[in-house]
Image 1 (cartoon, rainbow, N blue to C red):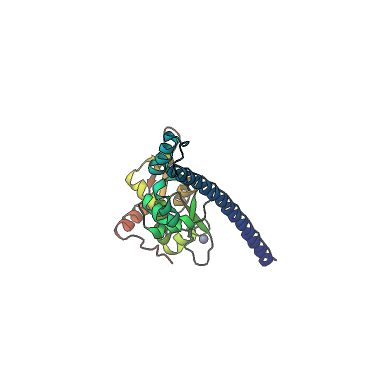
Image 2: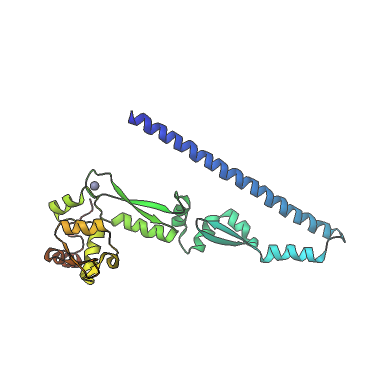
Length: 251
Ligand SMILES: [Zn+2]
């Protein structure tokens, strides 16, 4: 009963999310109460000073003034500090998105999306689907701030990617390659004879390009492999440089 199991998993997930949200909101509630009590105390001190109370020291009043006029709150939010001056806390309470967006020098709409996206270990993720019709494989692009999120979104919207199962088929049936493989071929073209580390390439990717006859390897004296394009590999690089994505139309 996979449907039932999926439904149960989804329900569990929902209740876990609700518990986390409850925890967060009750923590926020308790912190608000503390801050409000502290500020109310400051107000009472200033009121008593106005009534002529001689017991309040000048140093204490100066400290309150320094805190409220020159102090700020550092808010650790998703891997970065956002500093909000005490004087502008009200603006922050009213519209944290506007101030956060200013801090990152980004429009409010993407900042709101960043603020709402799920993070795992401080990283957000977006996925690129396999370009083969009907395939549900995806590969993940991670991002750590709103700017990286925008770059990942732009990449996810246009990137062509084939999963491990479909990349050979895509090449054989339509001469189609994923963008990361075209980029790797271009790097080999620009830096022939480099090893995998210099090319920032993974073994599975060089293995694949060798298997479809676009790349060839030779053993260097240091026993590391160096890579060169084959004639077919050269043709691909020249084709894609003049007419990008000739056969790799995104479905
Ligand atoms: Zn696939």
